[in-house]
Length: 281
Image (cartoon, rainbow, N blue to C red; front, top):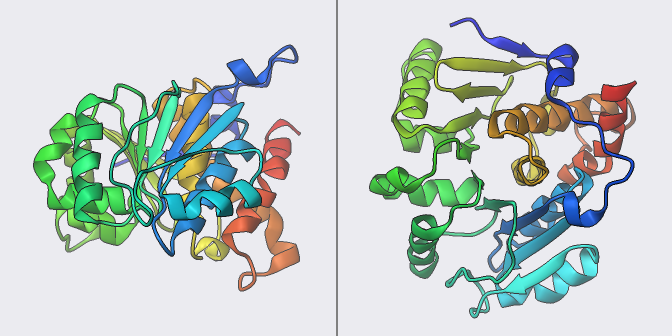
């Protein structure tokens, strides 16, 4: 395995500068589906991250209990609510997003699992799947065949293990992940230190980031960032590569001010602008 290192040179090959004549209607519309009672913060983090990564429009689909929280905390994000108060049970919407991120804080209620299955059967929109949506998939492996080619999944090590099974060495982990990627034609963001992106036989290794990213909500932010880039018409592999690179870069930029311990997921979002500026500097 010879990974391709994701550094600034590699990023500049896929980074698309903003057209000075653009408007919000052509900057992409991202839909983030997530949240449940006690975990509405995950939906807030992922949808705000999507906005800060450059999406023209962002809509969050959440349970009713999160409506006021999201509207007040992020006024720029539009909100659609499920019929249920505390969890998602019926994923229906009349908007036309260019990309959808699903999973942050969504929980594993039976009704959530059923509507997720129906959603996978019908959606044709480019997808990023994370968190509990991945855990639901790992319990229902036959559903993996419903995923469109080049769907992006973003598992942390435990979520990856539930999907591909245990491994005894790093070499075996990569072997199994590559085989899984090929079998289902998925792009797999293997979160870790460093994060790797697997697209069939192609393995990319990220060069940004540090231990400050090991904090609650960090993955929810990454989901929002990658979904945003997908909605902005980046190819799925480039959305994953650029999202992971920018995500790590925010921690590198903030570290001198925050240190490792006090850096939180919101600091990632606060530093996305600086990360973009450093790409083009």
